[in-house]
Image (cartoon, rainbow, N blue to C red; front, side, top):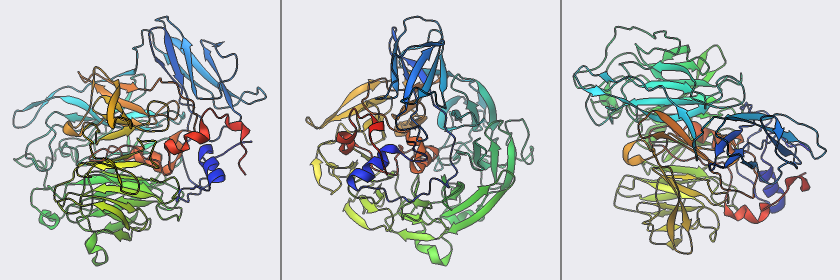
Length: 622
């Protein structure tokens, strides 16, 4: 029996325990990526190599996998329990691995996948060498250099495997609150072996900083090749070396800010970096004071996302403002034209109360079960048709998480924190905005995290800077001491269904018996990005099995390192990438203050009894 376009384990939960997520996507009609096998091989030690690959929803339930090295089969029997294999290979020579799916009758299936382990491969990570940009000098005489910053993924050439789209930030990048010139923002596209496909230079008229350039990487027109969308201006140079607009224009003020001048939205080919379409940016900045100040601190706060607004094809949504006026503009790309779908503007009298409700990030998902995506814009939500869905009026925050928190409740929910020195941290229904429980605070609550870290409590746990401890889905305090728990990123790492915590270059696991977090992995020689935010270039299920990878930069900024768990696991699940909510959470991870991935269904330790050591072809779902 064959499953198409859905997660087996999600269907199994639905059939056996009556649980289902609130999302109502018609996955048979949705335009989605054509994923390959995602094979990757990494040295676990000097004597052993870990090979990992994707289990796809298109695979039969009885599928097994044979593993080959340099054409020789290594597996006596197909691998059926997990999607990992450990090869005792002590040679420092390169090795070509291939993973071949087979049915229970021994028939070879597709797609197979391959990966070549390079000679003298490092232990514990994949090394991706970079072409570091040259240093530069600002008009004020300040020298700057470049460091790898946020990254995203996309299959740019249609082979079913991801490339990395990497933003280079100059060392003089600035927050909107600060004056000063910056160097140009650059974008590169790399294969996992370090081959650079192109470079885009946004030019002198795009200021560098966490809030200026949000870039979306996604296949928008269904040709199985990802596009890249971002704000541009006169002087931007595409991946083919072609200039956008007027090369002589220089909109930089004496204080380094950019307060006037042309603003564009450009869609680039992910394969070549060529600018395929450029239109005026919506909304225009207009009079700066209308956004709240005359220094572009509020007018130049940008967000972006991808959303299935019609339930079938992905749209790109570019956003401006969240402290005061908030505008979201949705666009569709059909391979020829970039067309505006709708604009939501808090200046519209219908939506005046939505001003000032946005976060430094956003979330996307079908929260009301209509099969179309809504946008969780901080304390408010925008419906798929560009109208307001609800508004809690709790104002701005820095962190927010959207998923199914409770395995017995199919509704999606939101854990959010607020900076108004009043509302603290809140847990709400994602479809209605109903506050389920709240921990109020008279302080600025800047960080919040949600993850299933304690298997002795049902569902996900939540905590924030001012949450009064680690809380369960009912809002009850599990432990008051959260001093060892980071409030940053989360990652499925060690092979069980609980989640681990990622902060800087460390992965730690919560020990519920001791009530503390303990380190389980330290990525020596690699460092995080964005100062105190301390996030990776990217985190998520990027390659290999269902567990998540961590992409960090090296200390000298000469390479990226992709860290993959080699801990044995008793589980195999379809890749998270096939869930629309999860996939979009990767696409939006680079937006402003980076947030970890979250799926659109419950995934956690409550499922362990259902799946431990299970060979899934023994189950038949009607």
